Amino acid sequence: MRQRIQQRLFHAAPFFFRSHPGLEAYHRAQRCADQWLEERLACGRQEAQPVRLLEAEPLADPPARLIAFYLPQFHPIPENDAWWGKGFTEWTNVVRGRPQFPGHYQPHLPGELGFYDLRVPEVMARQVALAKLYGIGGFAFYHYWFNGRRLLERPLEDYLRSGLDLPFCICWANESWSRRWDGRANEILIAQEHSPEDDIAFIASAASYLRDPRYIRVRGRPLLLVYRPELLPSPVETARRWRHWCQNNGVGDLYLAYTQSFESADPARYGFDAAIEFPPNNSHPVAITKRIERRNRDFKGMIYDWTVYPEQSRHYAPCRYRLFRGVNPSWDNEARRPGCGAIFLGSSPSGYREWLENAIRDTLDRFDDMSERLVFVNAWNEWAEGAHLEPDQRYGYAYLQATRDALEGTGTSQTAQINPSASNRAA
Image (cartoon, rainbow, N blue to C red; front, side, top):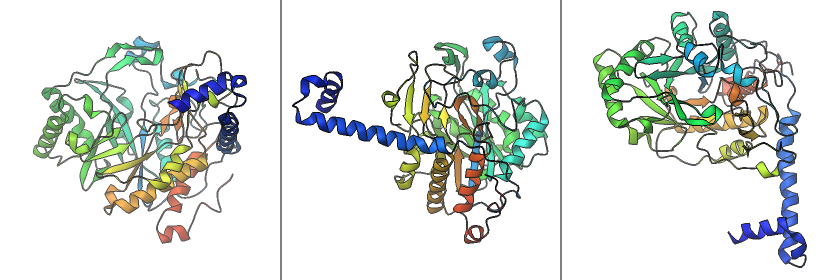
């Protein structure tokens, strides 16, 4: 505390402390900090060259399965029309993005797939083709269930009826919906009403997915994700009801995992089998807002250093429970919260590749069972959060290419000896 007060005084009134022995050390530290920041951010700017589509066969036999979270909010629904305006989709948010300081990458605009509509079947077919080409092993579809009422269900239902062969699972986004996007978090649009009866109704409704032959299984058990189990009145009782129902209705036992979006508890606390890292949520990022010069005067958000994540992944801390690693290509929700978003600065395809490589190696070291060698990516298409593997206008296919490169770089000796993309990649 004394040091912080001293630094504030040095910054506000340096002329009063000309003879203080700490003033020069303070100025020297500031110069080093500015140089440190510039070096860390320069890499991302240098890599902002579009990478072309890879001409190769889909990646075979990856060392781990990458599961990318998939947002279905790219088609209009009556509820969103009523709450946010006629024709609202996630693209409505995306195009609102504006740079908040020089060099700020906004808006994020789509590349090959364009401003797609998930009611068009060719869109999802192309998404699956791209995912397979670059080594994504499955989608985790967000699932919106509110006491028997479902929202944004069409893409998943269409997928279920399709012949698309990419494995998938569901993640129940079990929060109530509010107007927090426009600063009115206390105004609830549709609420969750958890109860024992709702537990049974939910799992009975989800059974059609769990029984699908494409559904992702861990140790032979369907993988069911829950976004925030702590919101359930009694997660242990809910897990017990779900397991009992599934065992009595031909589904078998579940493999339950939750995303560490707001807490880092042992999954056993909820009666679950595993936890999933969900960066940047719950990851204690380093704030650098005040170091970014020429910010818009009205900007009230926060700016964080994304580059710490690849660095931290070089030395993962041990964990006493089953924990699946998570990574993100970048993150910036300025488009959802104009002028007050959370911006993670310094992301780059090379940094993402390093982070992913380290996550894969850590996974191979900790899990012997191939079905548990899972790494989660946040996300496939969170465009308004600046977290997307899908190609964009700035980087092209760079993040997808980095994904495949990371898998090939951490694969078996046979995979390492034969790199089918090396001669075909167009930079």
